[in-house]
Amino acid sequence: MIRPLWYLVGLVAFWAVVPFAVLLVADLARTKRRTLSLRHKQWFWAYLFVAASLAWSSLFLFYPLGQAVLQSLTDFSLTSATATEWVGLRNYKDTLSDPFWWRTLLVTLVFVGGTLPVGILTSMFLAVQILKQPRPLQTFFKGALYLPGVISPVVGAAVMKWIFHSGDGFANAVLQEMGFQSRNWFGDPALAMPVLIAMTWLSANGVGVIVYTAAIGNIPQTYYDVARIDGASAWRTFFSVTWPLVKPTTIFVTVTGLIAGFQVFAPALLITGGGPLHTTYFLNYHIYRTFYYQNEFGAASAMAVVLMGIIVFVSVVNYRWLATDVEY
Amino acid sequence: MARYKGKNVSTAGRAVSLSVLLFYTVFSLVSLYLMVVSSLTHLGTTFDVSDLDWLPRDWAWDNFSGFFTVTHDAAWLWFRNSVLIALGPTLCNLLFSAMAGYALAKLEFPGRVLIFWLIIAVMAVPAFVTLIPLYQMMFRFGWFDTFLALIVPRMAGIGGVFLFKQFMTTLPSDLPEAARIDGASEWSIFWRIILPMARPVLAVMFLLDFVAAWNDYFWPYLVTNSKEMMTVQVGLISLVGVDQGFVMQLDYGVIMAGAAMASIPVIALFIALQRFFVRGLTIGAVKG
Image (cartoon, rainbow over the protein chains, first blue to last red):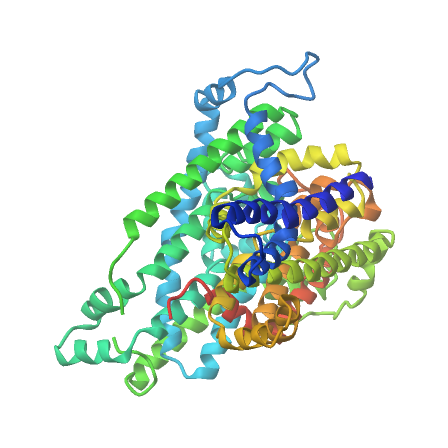
């Protein structure tokens, strides 16, 4: 229990001393000097300052990352009686040829496609509305719309289970009040995913709203004055001035939204259990079931590495696609 | 569409947008409202919404003590653990990240660009990739179901460095330069000059990290087993059920009281320090 703490101490010492020493020796050899300058002193302090961060990420990030990649090439599993063997790319082949994996990818894509574009447009729209209000109201709305974002997924899920309870939950009471039949929300394959998506529209736009409010608020007033003098309509002004100038923010919101969206997990774990009929069985949930219940660590690692590939790919494509030269 | 400093927008236009905003806000807060009302109502286990009124009907404050009763007082430990985990490692991480951010922003050294790109690259690594080996690591280290697993991995890292680096780059360099010429050590420049100037970003990072740690449920759920080691979130999961549709034998008013108590710290912090949240989110996301 205590020994791993010494690994950490050792790693901190390593990062504080070794890179500095190597750089110093190389530099002294290059310049053929024998005295230390102020520059070298800064190097020493710099590596001392980053040592803890690098040590922790070496042990808890880079090492596990490497291990995940290596493990994905083995058939390591707690359930099989045979010794672990290298299987090359078999896990990847199995993953990509498994129709169920593609299905979980589709489920994830449906969620991302259902939440992200609407979320971005809603945030932008709300930001424009917020900026029309006086300052105190701006602060109020930014806070009120962000508030659901600080509530934990667990609490959110507990409340959702209550709202959408198949019996006399809140949503069904509202339906009955309006003269409709009650529904079995999370028990109905046609309803579970739409409900999750709709709830995300309502609760997950806080970051987008705040970021867009700041971005649109930063656009110089003169641009809008010029547009008005030229007689541009409100729509024209939006598409020719606001939209291109907030593009960096749109990139940020899209990329972070994609990274988070592809990792959607909480609703499946906490509300639906992936059901009904696997309609909410997200990629990440599939990985979790594979390693936590089936203990197939090799296969689960391969799926996680594929997911990482997907995330890196869509982030880069998005960055390229949305990249802009418009400056102000 | 003018830039909305007020004077360019007609009163009617402002009224329309105000009602749109109010409408949306009501919808996005309705679940929180429902939680508060339910937590103060004797609901029983029947899930009949007709037990609810717009205001708590019977002001059932005993739901809150009931939460501790149904968990056989384990909930006290859950709250203690959550406070411990959300506070200790967060403060530690704050210091280490600020140090690294300072080095990347203000010190000249070979490898600086490389480390910065590493930080950016790491953002695209999904948590699940490292989670599986980390989970196994906790067993190998003998940390499973101990505080070490909950605390040590959170004590430092490079995720928080980005915000500090971004902010500290914007600080003027002449003050640290002057101090350096006067013979101050790098540590005292960092501690006496940079840190006081970085107070707003320290607040931001503390809040974001605290909320993330307090709300984190999956890592504690993976690495804890015994009731005494659980955090509030894991405790709630154990009551509400996991990996399935619905299991509930408990009074839902009591559950909602527990959920409300689990939300109070983050809501209070958020309301008290909202402007820092806003600031933290816009560092690095907005030009200018």
